[in-house]
Image 1 (tube, chains in turn green, orange):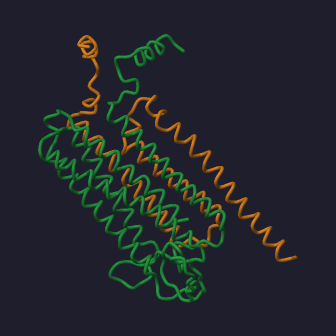
Image 2 (cartoon, each protein chain N blue to C red):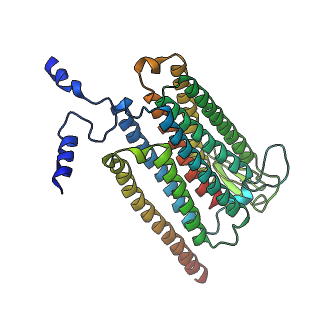
Image 3 (cartoon, chains in turn cyan, purple):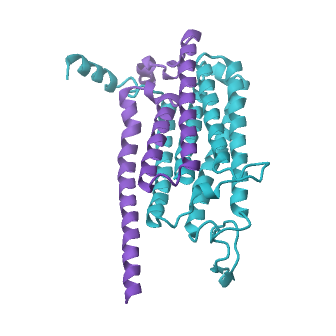
Amino acid sequence: MSNQATLQLRKDWDGGVSPLGVSYGKLFMWFFLVSDALTFSSLLCAYGFMRHKFTGQWAEPNKVFTHFPFTEASLPLAYVGFMTFDLIMSSVTMVLAVEAGHRKSRKEVIMWLFFTIIGGLIFVGSQCWEWYHFITGPESGPYHDVTRRFIMNGKEVIDTHFSGANLLANSYTLLPTFGDFFFCITGFHGFHVFSGVIINIIILSMVALGIMDKKGHYEMVEKAGLYWHFVDLVWVFVFTFFYLL
Amino acid sequence: MADFFEEYKGYPNYEKMAIHDEAHGKQIRKKLWMVFWIMLVVTIIELVIGAFANDKLSELNKEYVFIFFTVAKAFFIVWVFMHLGDEKKAMKYVIIAPYTLFIFYLAFMVITEGAYTSTIRDVLEGVLLHH
C-alpha cells in the first residue's frame, strides 16, 4: 500500500470522523434495509425451494393473472405490468424529491412527495384488486372439479367444486403452497408499501411545516426515500419470481 | 464530560454533504430520467417475453434471462436511486458484501435441495408403483 493510501486510511479510521462517510441516521437506515432485504430473500428462497421441488406442477402465471379492470378480455400480465410501471414511476418521483431536497427547494419537495404518495396509494389499491380476483377466481378451469379434503375446525370437509384461492386450496394448481406463498410474500410486500406511504405522509407534513428548513438540511426526505426505493427493489424481485417465471 | 464534547466539535456535518446548486441538480436529474427510461424498456421486454414467449423458452433459459434482467434493474435502483454509487468504497462493501455472501449461499443450498427432493420423490414414487 502506498504511503498516501495509508495516510488516508489512518485519517478515516483513527476517530473523529465517520469512517463510512455517512451520517448516523442514514447508516442505520441502510443497516435496517439490509436486514429487511435478508428477510425478503429468505422468503423468496423458500419459494424457490418449492418451485424446484414441484417442477412442472406449479401454476403458470400468464394463465392465472389475465384480468384487467373494466374489461372481460384476457390480457396476460397486463395489470401487473401497470403496477410495476406505477411503482417505478413513484420511485422516480421520490428520487426527484430527494434531489429537490438537496437544493433546499421546499415547494418542489412537496410536489414530488405528493406524487409519490399518490403512486403508492394506486399500487396498494391495485394489489387489493389483484388479491380480490385471485381469491374469487375464474368460474371454470382445469383444477375446479377436483375432490379436495380439508380439516376445518377439527372436522373433515369434502369439496368437489372449488374456485379461487385460500390458504388451504386453490383452483390454479393442486398445490395449496402456491396460494400460501402468493399471499405471504405479496402481502408482506404490500404491507411494506402501505407503511412506506404512511412514512411519506409523515415526512410530507414535516416538510410542509418547515421542520426541515429549521434543521438546515433535508436528510429525512433522503432516508424515507431509501425505504421507498427498497420497496420498489423488492417488487422487482417479487414481480420476476411470481409473475414472470 | 464537557471536554469530551469539546473534542468532537470538529465532527463533519454529513447531513449537509449532498447539498448542491441548480446547475449540478440539472445534471443529476438528466441521469435519473435516463435510468428511468432504461428500467421502463427492460420491464417492457420482460413483460413481452413473460406474456407471449413463455412457452418458447426452456425452463432453465427462462430463469437465466429473467434473473439477468432483474439483477440489472436492482443494480440501477441501488446504485443510482439509492445513491450507493456515490458513497465511499468502505460503505459500498459494508452494505453489499454481507448480503451477497449470505444470499448466494442460501439460494445455492435451497435450490440444490429443492431439485434433489424433486428427483428423490420421483424415484421413490417409481419404486412404490413397481412393487
